[in-house]
Length: 190
Image (cartoon, rainbow, N blue to C red; front, side, top):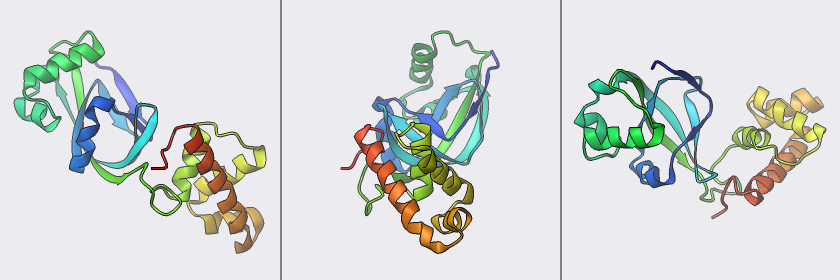
């Protein structure tokens, strides 16, 4: 099977593999050909976002070409234990199937307070708020979308309000979005 999947900004990780994140750099082996669209991704586990990471390498192999080294790098004791786990997750895996080995570097753990942003910048909070449909009106949605488009509060304020004074409004919307993300359980505040 040569299944091609495009990876967006969000990567799911089973909670039993969360200890990988503490190493700072880890791999995850997924069935099929995975083509990342972005270099930075958010890692989700157990229904919440737990980290932000940068994809530092992507390689492809057939299941038959996986080695003990690949298995150990992915946190398994041997090639056979890795293949058993792939079979358990994906049900039907053959030696001819392709897998993708993603190597990631954790750039920020999320859910631990870092000022008032829980380790996320305003653009990240805006992306999450729109992705998780945080309750807001159309104007707030438009403000967050413009923040994403412009990449900074300053640029978005000039575009939306014609001056830097609009930064106060944008920050207020971002703070509201963050509170909703915490109350919805997407982010943790401890």
